[in-house]
Length: 79
Image 1 (spheres, rainbow, N blue to C red):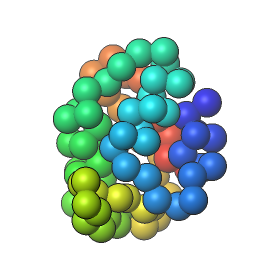
Image 2: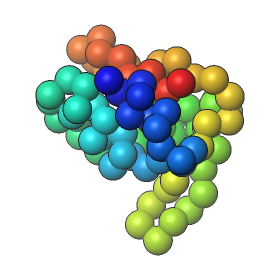
Image 3: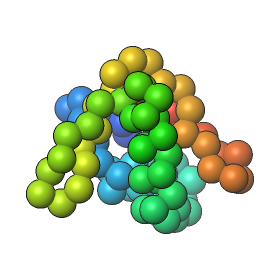
Image 4: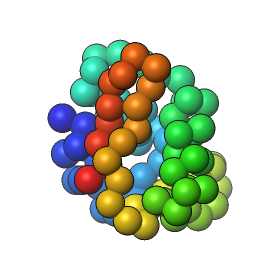
């Protein structure tokens, strides 16, 4: 599932990585802008760190996180 999808990454991930995990878990698409909004909010709350890459942002967990939910109440766990 998506929990393993993120956990198996080498510590950092992008919004595109999250999009792929979401599609794998729910067999559905979620707009990158929506994913980016959630990741930005988690960063602003101190749950993620981020660094600028050539193509956008790369994120890492700063502390345990257990929610990334869209309006359909689907949840991606970032363990």
